[in-house]
Length: 448
Image 1 (cartoon, helix red, strand yellow):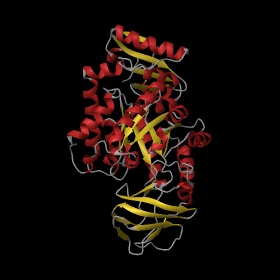
Image 2 (cartoon, helix red, strand yellow):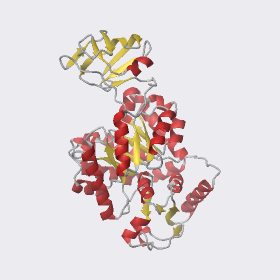
Image 3 (tube, one colour):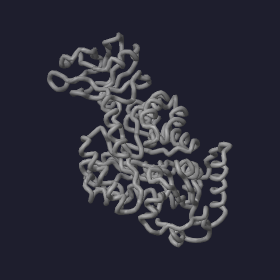
Image 4 (cartoon, one colour):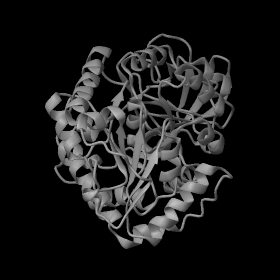
């Protein structure tokens, strides 16, 4: 199957999209990678989803990637005696470790790590920033705050601490169980939530090994201060604009997104833009014009992939959301200004044979009417470096490993074939590095 575009589409599976028929429809509409969100559902449901994806892969003869998205540490207040409270501006409010039901004066915050990191004047955001508290005084087991932005707070609402690096491992007990489960099923990518520093990735890398590729989700402003370290230690990054947009002022999110994309482009690491891309399509069959522009701008900036969350997992129009996202990407990539923007990146090169060859391929594809650029790869590294150059011709990644072919599904422009999938297609033949002057559909021995 040849996608008539270079950027990829991730879609989250959920109640609206988990039947074999739904997964097939999503795949045929344009999904390249399916996301399994471990924040929702149980292992039995997720196992069935993975089995359905692998069955579709066998039927289609096309490698399909699965991304396991770990929940990470969720910081939440406790429960209230009446289920919720209304906080007024300027009112005092205490957070502590006392598990007793909360009142209008206090509530339990069962995370001693937060208290250890607090200082006077620190801001605390409740319920995705709808309520804002300011710390007046604090200790090892409490924080006295004043309400700066009033509102209603109900049971178990989330807490964000912008600008503070919390001494928390990104892996909870639940994450360890979910990770073992996912690796047992053979997922291709593992997404780590709330990465703040290089140590977070070192810990996860030791657990994952070479059984999957590692994607770091940037959801904390503190991660931006350590962006180069995080890029270096991960295999891909995600601009997770939901939580990032809670802790970072909204006007700074676009610049942060561009900075992350550029850092990944320079390093030759795939980058995914996610959250609220087609949010209105949860309940509407068409997106807003602003949402269409949002998706388009991510592609113009050079993102490898864009992602659907609730739109495909629990929305009313999952197939339509994938279909319009596919159309937007194709339209952008056919715009001459897209190519101009992509070619203006001054990426620089490492003094390696891989970069020398990849740079030469890009220049040849610009000069000659090349139908396809082919990379032979065992680990996927050659595919990453070639995609970094964004050549004008399609990239065909050939590998003897099905796992590598699946992992390349996240990478810009990479049409993947493994020895297994080529055997299924029965169209394998010896392949030169570059085919000139022919349409891709006419190249002998290649399935698109």
